[in-house]
Image 1 (tube, helix red, strand yellow):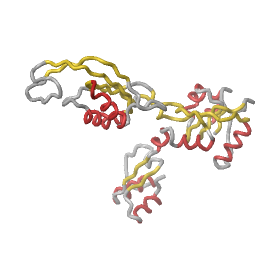
Image 2 (tube, one colour; image 1 turned 180 degrees about the horizontal axis):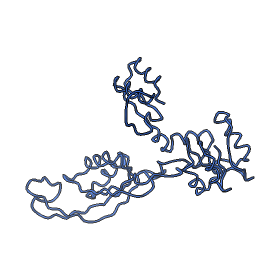
Image 3 (cartoon, one colour; image 1 turned 180 degrees about the vertical axis):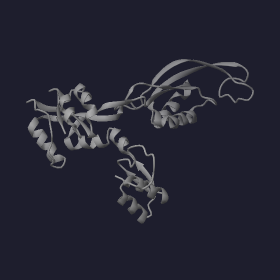
Image 4 (cartoon, one colour; image 1 turned 90 degrees about the vertical axis):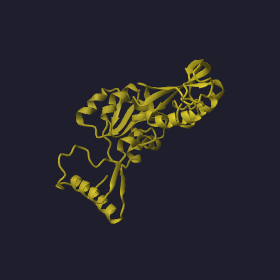
Length: 281
């Protein structure tokens, strides 16, 4: 957390960047007068040219982040994001003369496109004909100026996360033989199963409910665990969410989890289990 003590330490040590988990500002500010710790931290950071970078949700939402570390401690395998994000993927389509397809495709893959789950180098390729006419200012790779040209081409389709789109397109253009490569980018509604809230996984061997809860209590510091009624069944599939995870309860039930491990469950939230799952807070 970014506290006033942390800001003071940064000033003393001439540090100009603080990387934190929780953001300093959780709610909107209408004034910065220094009347509370958050406002004092902001004033001191600005006056001393200290940048603050918070990576809370970022670290929560990657499959190997906070929830991944929790799953490591418990010993979960076959992991999946509990509530994957949507709208983060795009499809890139380009058209390449047949003799240059491999070079362009590999450049696209090396830039990070074509990853689907546990597979990489994923693409779809179809054959067809492209047509174009170069004007007098062009230097065409094939064909003649002011004459329509027809070229056998391969249509390459790949999926990629939007945040690497510019990098992938730049690599594709660099490897492409055409002076003006044609390409399309389509936004997808698909789930991005590597990013999202919570996580599910399986134990290598099913465990007795009481034994499992006791093991969790020891693993995570010996604090008391509040939980719903036990079912008498074995624990095999586990859902987890670091921090306040009550908003994922229905996702955990739909995922077939035997138990949902999270924190900050309110009194009324526990009733959402409806004997379909154990909630362990």
